[in-house]
Image (cartoon, rainbow, N blue to C red; front, side):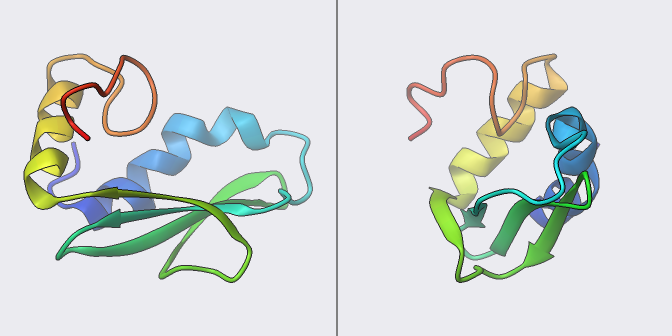
Amino acid sequence: MANTPEEYFKKELPVQFGSIAEGVDEGPGRICFEVTGAGLWTMGIKDSAIEVTDGRHEDTLVQVTLDGDNWEKAVARLEEGGMGPIGGDSMAGMI
């Protein structure tokens, strides 16, 4: 389980979404995730794998921003067996 947003985005997100990259050389753009006060991480597809890097890239198509409190709620959902911060059940009430 990730203890920080950085650990989640760099270690767990590539595993959680790795299958979407199979057979894709490079994606058409990237998704940037921001946790206010913690940082920015950008997810893209490169060489049939999920690549997560620090910061926002110029080819970012979408940015998702959560404040620290909502990040903690999302991690709690993950620990309770929900899909976690990204994807899965409705995020109503968290945004």
